[in-house]
Each structure stands twice: as structure tokens, then as C-alpha cells.
Image (tube, rainbow, N blue to C red; front, side, top):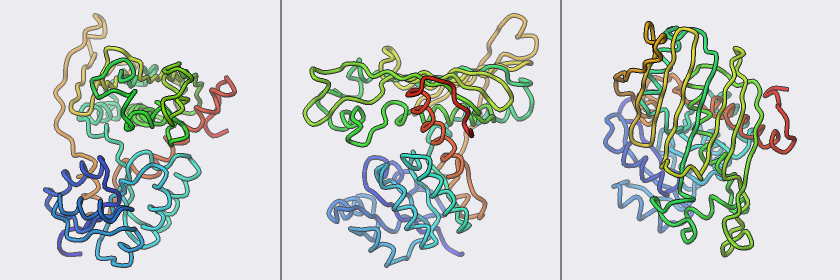
Length: 353
């Protein structure tokens, strides 16, 4: 197909704005349409980003049809229906995380996209970290030998500080603490990122896990206004990998002193890698060769890596699906679903039992 790839943005919230800012200047694509359940919001968004067409429903945009692929930035619960409609119309999709709130829904989306032979990707944003990409290449090259142990965490502290705003008064934080408003707690919100970080960085599948969760009292009566504060705030997971290695993965919104930190340490028989990332930057330290005798860690420069948005455009232009794919995101969602079962049953569970 000649000319730039014509992109439709579905949803006009905060993530849609970030995508518009990132896709708009990229050569090889053009933002041609915006969709929102509110026609007024769609028009305002389209005007702000110089998008020529605005629609009050996805059905209207599909009837128009003059676009090549879609960016799905709708709320989590709307991902499945909107994505399936786009796939049925033959449109490749770049979907926000999580792919769907449950593994069965994510799998249905995956199978639909694969059956249709369409490019499909999920915006697991920490794949944009150059350190995790470099670490994966080193693992694949055998630089640290066979992996034997893994430590990983994603730690935030907005329940103990006000650096991102006051969760007690702002809806954008309160809904994340309430299952009735669509939240699956810290596990659903950021667990998806750290589990992707772990499985991508190590190149290993998680084959079994044991999860424990805690919900802490945060307000009198356990509620603020219409928000019942009932979802998990901290989660600790013990995991077993496909090669027999063990690991620990934990996440919390009560990690005082940590703003938004992903940490992953991969210990191998010949060396080790230590990766840190936040939403803006990343670092890689290595312990290799003679340094393993003195436990000396050294920083390693990492070349810039394409962002997920760039990978999606490359996939559209080449026809070769990019990563992270729907299939991978569905497998991560399977782990999240299983963690809830493990916590309820208080036991280790095999992933594919």
C-alpha cells in the first residue's frame, strides 16, 4: 500500500493523548480519525491534534472505513468488544494494556487477530526501556549462562505520599482502589508490567506461582464517597520458571520512598544483570567475568530502542507482527488471573494445569 498508514484513535483519554503526541510526528503514518462515546470529546480531541475526522461511535468510524489500522485507547473493560469489531473489519490493532480484564477475553481477542492474519500489539510501556531490551539480548547470547534465580519488583508510593496528587480526593486514583469501578488492584494495574518485564527480560515462561495479597484499611468504613476501597494494595508472588529457576515478584502502592520503580535482577551461572526502569529512563548494571569473584557491578551503556509505537508502525509497513503481541499479553493475563486463584486457595498453582 502506498502512502502513509492511516491511523484511527479509539478513545480520547490520557493515554490516547500520549499516543497522538507520539504517532503524529512519525514519518510513515497519519492520524486521520478519532472516536469517543461523547461526540463533543471526539471533536475536541480531533481539533487539538489536527485530526480531520471525529466520530461519536466506533460503528460510525467503521462505516466510514478510511483508515488502515487502529489505536485502541478505550477503558480496560471496552478493549474486547472494540478490538473484535476492528478485527472483523480487517483492521490491525495497537491496544492499551491490559489486553482484557480476564484471560478468556484476552485469548478470544488473540485468536481473532491471528485467524484474521492481522498485525496485533499491546502497549506494555516498559518495553520502551533500553535496559530491558539490552538485558534480553545478553540473556539470549548466553552472557550470563543458565538463569538460576530472579528478583523483581514494581514499587509505587502514592498511597503514602501526594507526589502524583491526593488519592483521597481525586477520582483518577480512587477508582484504582475500588473493584466496583473496574479495578483489580495493584496486581491488575502494575502487575501486568512487572510480569511482562520478568518474562521478557529472562526469555523464560512462568510455569507455576504462589501469590499472597493484602488490602489495608485506608478510610473509615473502608470507603470514600461511592468508592469502596476493597482491592489489593500489595502483592508478593513466588514463581517457578520453565527451566526450573525460582524467583520472587512483588508490587505495592505502599512502598514509601519509591515513586515508580521497576527493578529486575537476573542471576545466572556465569554472571548477573540488574535492570532498573521508570516511565522516563532505565539503567543496566552487570556482574560478569572476573567481577563475579568480587561481586562487582558495573554500569553498561544501552543503545536507544524503538518505542512500542514505532514497532507497531514497522509491523504495519512490513507485515511482520511486532512484540509485545496479543498472544504474549494474553499469557501475562493468564498469570494475573491465576494469582487471584492462588491467593484465594493459599497454594502454589501450575499455570497450565
